[in-house]
Amino acid sequence: MDDDDMDALVVVTDAFLQQGKELREVRREIFDILVEETWRTAMRCRHYWTVQYLHSPSGTAWMMLYRYGSKLKFLNATSLTRSASHQLLHRFAEFYTFAHPNYRGRPAKFRYHHQILGLVLSFYVG
Image 1 (spheres, rainbow, N blue to C red):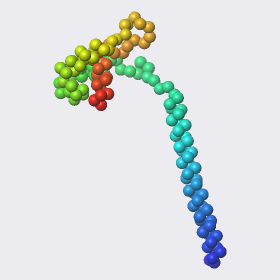
Image 2: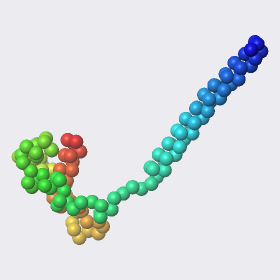
Image 3: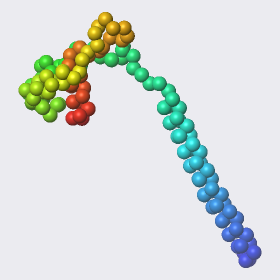
Image 4: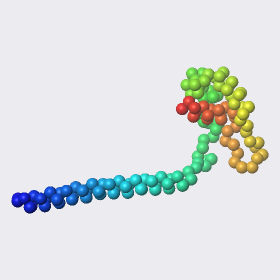
């Protein structure tokens, strides 16, 4: 190979590598645009659960723990002893009121203050 052929080969190789680099950048930009558009679409969609997908409150893990759980299991789940939990529940009940059942709209799923407090504690402890 003479020098002219070698120079041409270097120029072609450089152009080929530059094209590959630019192609990767364009693909990355397209991927970012698609991810952003998918995110926007997902945020515009309404995701909700209907009541039929929710468990009955009387059969939840919290109700089983509250009714039948040992002191140690209760302490592990809430980081509170039962007596401390009852003190907190007594104080909590003063600030949380349930809607009267005669009000229009969807009926409340929770009927007891300890269910609401258990939900709050699960987010606090978890």
